[in-house]
Length: 304
Length: 253
Image (cartoon, rainbow over all chains, first blue to last red; front, side):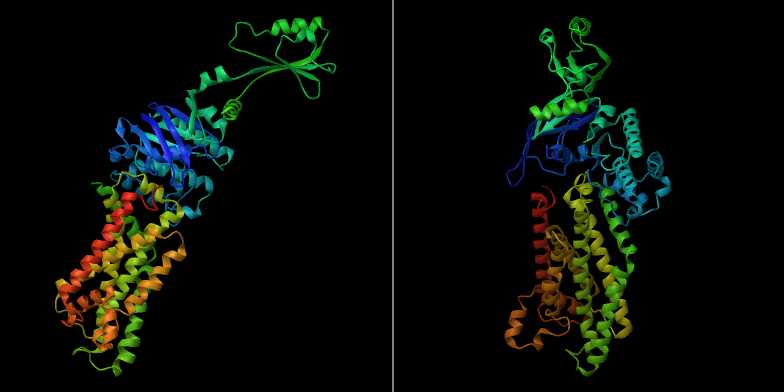
């Protein structure tokens, strides 16, 4: 659906925000673009949407060039920006109607009604934006972005600063959009959000794409699994007889942490427990945990 | 052509005017009426006729131009500056619209407002003084040319300004003195010869002179020259706007 090839953006001051970025986004998928502040996420989105000019490279949307065929490409895209710019003195209905017209669609009160009802904004349709709460303003921005029935929706940190309940609502909206065939590109600081929603994950840092992978595969391949054994008695150090295992002693010396590979043929847990018994190390509890997407993300960014 | 977009911008901007009808229409009409009362009736009654026209009637074209120019600049500069200030400009920049369509929407709406104000002031003036329009077509042509040109100028100002001070400083420090010294309240021929020459470097002189000619067939400079200067100003503004859009100056990074 979106094909980005060798995209570079150098700002007037010489700062290179994007460095030869290549990325393909499939139709009807939810793609989460993760990266720390200043990584280039918003610049990338702004270029595809036509707000920022590219320095080098090519961007195709549904096979059309974003510069020579800008009318075709922009009509397919809706954008919910990171900030919450709203026309303070305009009503929700008028501002959505404006967005639809701006993107070249004839008036459709029925469709706008459907969108506003779907986003729980129908009872606020005659309310001015400045009288709305932050969460409601965020919904208005989504309604505006959907007003022209886009095939692609960019959500630039859509749940930043919204409460948990609203975030959950937003997630449901995004899932429903995917169900209707809309391609969703999401940037977020909440890795949990990407973990919940995304089909694929891309990580960008210092203007470079570090990784693009299916979320499930990424978590399977890069996720670590740990077994924590809570000991009866403190240990001074990991005994020599257990050195063949990837074991760490916690700071309070009250637990042993065993890192193991879930993909391996043998996890080594049975052998470890047997060897612990031989070494007369007793434990009174054990637990396993798997690293989250956040752990993977932090690890990737640190390495980069 | 994305006519829906042009219509959306135009309608949106016109709605803003009707939302702020006191500021948009009542305020300029009131201030111009005060000029009529003070200069037309109170002081004007003690001033002799100028080129066979009573002073009250003489100042009408100049006052219409004064209002139309300042309102055109104010309306269009605010129309583009406010979305820049609030950040809502992102929507226009990401929409499938050409620069011409954006311009048509914003400048078209601002020019419409100015024409409405000019017409209301003309109607108001007829309540105070005797008015005659010798060349209505030329009058409308000058009015439209001035509205569109100054709306384009205001658009340029709104794009250029990166703060409220900059937005107001040009109308106050440049446009206001030029309009007051452009023959709104007097004929250039009433000035000493040196000042007459200096006045000819003021582009507003040509607009007011041409507009006044369409009423009373009296002009400080020839109508053809006035029309030429008005078209030159319009062309210069269009060229600057074209450059702004081609380079993305202060709109796109």
